[in-house]
Amino acid sequence: MSRRPLPPRWHDEQLVEALVPTPLPVAPPQPAPMPTLPPPADQPSSGVLFDVARPDSAGRVTARPLLRVLGWTPGLALRVDVVHAAVLITPAVDGEHVVGAREELPLPAAARHLCGIASGEPVLLAAFLRRDLIVVHPSNTITALLADLHAHILGALDER
Image (cartoon, one colour):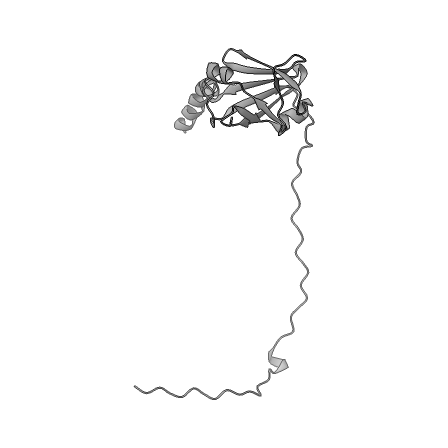
């Protein structure tokens, strides 16, 4: 099988203007309108803010947003108590613990053990603004409290 030679290329080819249309001016597209969002709330009406953290191996949890809202700064003396399987943290002049330099809260080993808090497991932090208090809930407490609600939600999905 022999190949045909390619046609010669013309180096002096030029476009004929009559055959190439001039592009029409096109107006830029109008941007889509932005949705209207509700104004941000300064504080929830309940006065409670939440965050989730994971204790490190030393039992510290980082809680920067909550600490800043409460006005708790590094070095602030804290009292740590356990009530109903939750850790309560409050400022106290004679507190044995302090807010860490990296804005972390201490969870002493005894408190972690009493509440079933393990390193690396998520905890729910609830800051009560009017009481100047943070409550730390272990994940097993949150799971138990939400079990009925989740069963109700999943039951509603099954009915569809």
